[in-house]
Length: 124
Image (cartoon, rainbow, N blue to C red; front, side, top):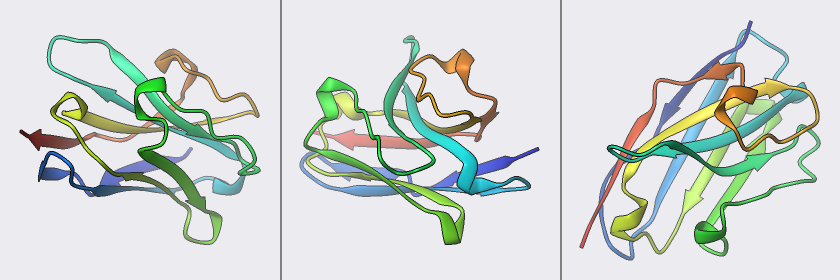
């Protein structure tokens, strides 16, 4: 049974950067597929980026391509989301999610393990 905890959110001005971290414990991290989702007030939880267990596949939400980078460090059981050129439209609670299996799902229901979320606020 894995447990994931996010950190790294905060308040940043438009054009700025943040790096989110997601530390997993209690499972075999190297076999988990990881992902970041985000949820703005009054909106659904959306897929932002995913990373396969092999680190060979990293799909992204179209609106964050070229600005966000997902990566993982299996030795530290951590998944990162580097966010650059942030805009107010990126403001949301960001959630780390993980699952067994090779498929990088884009729907929240596909993921078994969830963090508590970390707030990212981008001011204009």
